[in-house]
Amino acid sequence: MKNIVVILLFIGLFGFSQKVTITSEILFESKLSCRAILIDEDKVWMGMDKGRYGFYDKKRDTTIIKEIQSVTRNTEFRSIASTNESIFILSVGNPAMLIRINKKTLEETVVYKEDHEKVFYDSMQFVDDLNGFAMGDPIENCLAFIKTTDGGKTWQKVSCDILPSISEGEAAFASSNTNLIVKGKSIFMVSGGKKSRVFVSKDFGTTWKVYDTPIVQGATMTGIFTADFYNEKIGIIAGGNYEKQDQNWANKAITKNGGKTWKLIAEKEAFGYASCIQFLPNGQGKKLISVGGTGMYYSDNFGISWTKFSDNKDFYTFRFESEKVFYATGRNKLVRFEIQ
Image (cartoon, rainbow, N blue to C red):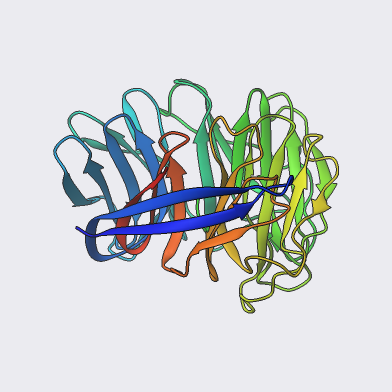
């Protein structure tokens, strides 16, 4: 294990400075790619490449990595969610495979499978122990959207008759399981590519509205790659141009009215391409962390300004355990960070 201490110095709005210390500890290292992470009590669960999933046991300080028996070794799980009894991992690519894993026995069950040359699922979340949702790239003229109302035992695909139509070249990016966010009764989905928009439902997917964003778009690898909402009103989107990862304009925006309008922030400042962005819990929507192609950044003023605290570009995704602790993964390792 390895400990790193990073000291950040922020200049406050009223001229005084605040020192923030962030420590990091490598929990394990192994050859892997991981874009799906979930913290569940004493375990940190991960969906991985090569048909694998795993978890870090915080109490025992041990890591278990297992191969899913019902998929090929080319399968990659980029979405993860949970109920009280089960972990769910969802693969990208054809065929889409949604696997339920019993938390106690680790018994695996295929609960949904979809065969289509265009199938590509990006993100998944549960609202409670019964209701869950997942979204993906369009097969027809809408984003793919599946749901469960029985705790993940069965899943149904929602018809495009109910969902908003997408534009030509509009899809989504499975960069960090952050294309789908649920807050209260509101579902937020984000898209990218030749069109980059936010899809909002305030009634768990019965009706939808779609809002344009100022995020860079128009090319296949541009748009929103990641999003988070602090509550049903305050949200942030980020991403940019995957093929020009230093491009730090029109790549991050904030809303305070539930996604209806968006304001670009930190133009030509701070990070470029972002794969994951998250609000700190209990931070009133002001505090944020971003990881991606230009390093790791922290903001404490709604993203108006950012401070880099690491040059590490190996992290694809992360989640908070508390307002002080988060876990990050991506290429070949899992790391615990603590904000002091």
